[in-house]
Length: 197
Image (cartoon, rainbow, N blue to C red):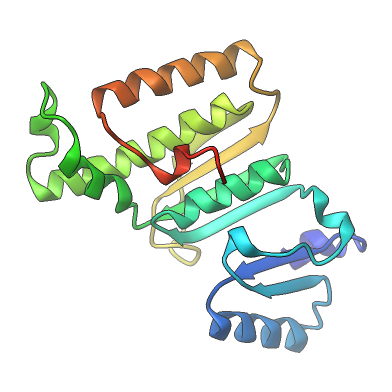
């Protein structure tokens, strides 16, 4: 990241982390490296206060190992900040696996009857829902495998680029596909789908 920012002296990197120990370690590493373009906030992402007025919009939002619903918080943050790009490496997608216990038994119940299958299907469903949700908000989304364990032990990365808005044909189609998927697994009140964020 420092190589990218070195070419853009006015750019800043804002790190939001709720664990104060991680924030302190990041500040120390940035200071030791002479990396002055980084701002740190010890906060949940939904409570983070803009460091200055120019933070009304951000270019890129990245969430690496954002556990369980923290990835969804990062998506909402990116949408609020009108981010052009979103990079997600989801972690511990447990919310949907928990919610599957309350889903009406239907023809696909055998897909998640066993706890291991519920966890695996929960992970898959979570990221498919996230993908469709981002598409419905005007993003072009690519889901691919993350190679290189030096970055993450997780193997899935979701890359989103803002290419339109909710009124485009592709966004409307994604919204419709999302609704059809949710009908199969109802009720599935995911935090991501709450528009109140």
